[in-house]
Image (cartoon, rainbow, N blue to C red; front, side):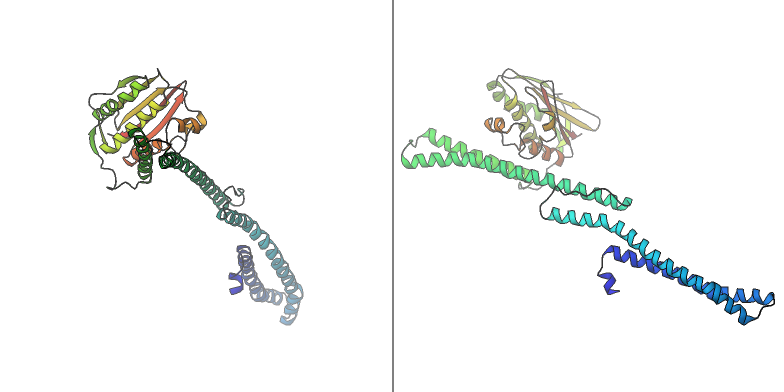
Length: 356
């Protein structure tokens, strides 16, 4: 038994099949040798034959046949059991081999869908897992690359200013200190955004309660008005006077401010930004639409990913860190809502819903 336990599933299945066949053959042989012999002897006696002659005839005709048939059956059962066990074991071995490749970092490993339905389902689950791990690895690499860039730019600027001050190349006047402070503020904003994205802000979870969403939206628009004016944008507001929803007031302000800042950043001069909100039976829908170049369809499903940019060089030039929309998604979903984006015919629309 210890030898069997140390072997693979194919050997165990083969041994189990042979054992089952052996038990069946044993029962058959006992039945023939005991019951069959007695019945045969009684039949011979009823026709006038002697008991010894009946036993000899039975041994000569039946016993040899049973022995040969049993031997053939055992050999056939062993061969069939090994073939069947190998057919079951092969796809499992492929899954094991692919799992070892994934463990070594090869997330492209996949296994073919074959074998019985249960094993085919296992292959499907493995392939889904490998695809999810590959996507997580891609996101991780993008995160590291973009985070390094976002940190490198202000740090390089700070280093340049400090070296220039040390060498006396520039004067230590208010303009220089203002530039240094701007770069430091940029680092602080990035750190706060990363904290919010990681859910590490102090104070626990969101303080969700019923708020007047309409008043909060109009307040955020008033704060963003100087940005609209500098960018020479036209603004249309379609928000009811009273709009009740459940949300954390501070986090909702962060959501709407991020979306308004995003609209200001990517709407060309003279363009139009439309802010809408509507009460629905179960929730409140808020949308911010802007004219402009739009978002390619292949990028639309990824705009809420951390550090994802549609056009990386352009976004960096415009000052985006690539995490504003990811924060929007996290905060809205933490309040029980949903987010989405649409872009076509020169119009891009971001929307989110919150429970009523």
